[in-house]
Every structure is written in structure tokens, then in C-alpha cells.
Image (cartoon, rainbow, N blue to C red; front, side, top):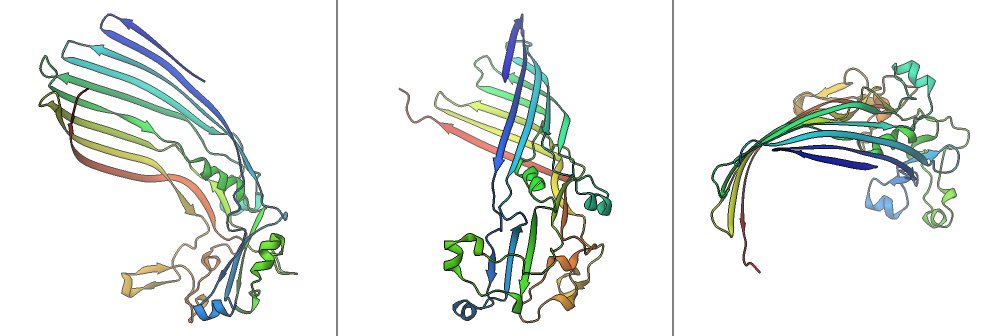
Length: 329
């Protein structure tokens, strides 16, 4: 639902508006659920002798489907003041709110172990964005135009980020990682004919530690953008412009592994002390294969990743542009 109202009062044009969207999604992504065989060599591939099999196994027997309801609301007010024939000043304020209305089920074991709230969905209702722009037409024919502008702009987390939270609750999927003698012999023809024959949890085996996706301290990313630009019209067919741009962004989202051990198991002196989080004794000398679960601080869980908003970014740019009209009708 969108609406806009504009009112002209003398040299000032006032604009008010709102835009609101309610989105429903239904997502089936059978990610890593078909299984992956790893072969140490071409000869092993030809002999159908893999040394590793990985698969995300649906515990219910069928691939889970996620459903989302997402509400995006916004409103803005703006005033454009024609101060003179040469100068125009525009200022405004925009507000946006975003809420993922579908929350995942609570996993009390994860909540207790990592002091998180697995049943919380991401939202941010306080996205206020002031903006302003000054345009100066230097001469009467507007052959030279100078522009200064700056303001705040917000961005929304992709819907897929919350889809991951709904999918990886720690109760609907299990990651298996079989090595060496435990790896089954591939039978690709049977898998194509009947996908249910793809190897799953070995008979009698315990469910592996779960991979869990949660929402931490999430806020919508916010960017300050500023620009100073000059445009010159050399003729009716040739114009050129120069611009200086600055962008500073905070609240950039990223995933943090809450279950990663606090310190590396060892470091590599020949790589400037780069840390390796799995113990050296767990790394295969023949293939170098590792298992991320050996880097877990809490062995009852695999990776427990939280969507956090602690990233920052900065950019400075200079631009130059020329436009030439080859012919006029």
C-alpha cells in the first residue's frame, strides 16, 4: 500500500508519503540434502572408493519447508524550497520499520548453553533517516550546476538470512560426516531412481551435534552518504561532471560462531601466526581433511551461528563522467 501527497505553497513544495508491504514466502531449499561424496584422487573416483560422505539429513524424512511473513513499513516528509531562481534547498526525514513476523521454535538447550533467544525473529522499527540537498545553478542558463547532498539510508537484511534461522533450529536437520571405512559405496543409479535410498544416519548411530542459526543483536544496516558534485554543459550535445563521494556504514550484519573455541588449538609460524582451531591430531596426514566440529567449545553442538550487526565499512570515491549526444531528432 503506497500513497503520496504533494502541496505547493509559494516557493515551497511539501511532500508526504508512505509505503507499506506485507510479504509472504514459502521456501523449499534442499541445501546439502542430496549428499556429497569426496574422493582423494581420480583413481579413487573411477574405483568408486570415496573417503568421505557428507549430508544434511531431514530428521522427519522429508525436506523441511519454511514460511515467512515479513512486514515493511515506511513514511516520509520532505520540503523543497526554491530559495531563488539559482538555489534550491531540499530537506526531509524518512522512517522505515522492518519486522520478520514468523519466529522459529524455541530450542531451550541452545538458549541455556549460549544465553541466546532462539525463538526471536529479527526486527528493527527505529530506522530514522534525515536527508538534505542544496543545488546551485551558477548561471542563468544552468550551464554550471553545483550540488551538495548528504543523509542517512538504511538497508534490510535479505529474507534468506531469516530463512536460515527457520531452517536450522537444531531439531529438524542433522549433519552427518562419515570418513574412511564408514563411507558407503556410491550407487548413483539407485539414488536417481529413488532419492530415499541416499545414505542417511547409519543404523543405531546417535544423532550428530546440531548446527543452529540464531538472531543476536540485530539492527538494520545504516549508511551515511555525502556527495559534492559539479556539472558543466559545454554545448547542447556535450556535458561533463565531477563528483566526490563519501560513505560510512555501520550495523553491517555478519554471522558469529558462538560455539568456536576461545583460542586456536595451534598457530602456524610460517603464516604469521595464523590460528587453526582444530587440534593437529584430528587432521588427516594423508588428505589434510578436517572436521569443523572439532573446533567446537561445547561438543553437544556443532556450529551455533548468530546474526549480529557489528560490522562497519567506509568508502571514498571520485567520479568523472562525460555525455555526448551523437544526433538529435
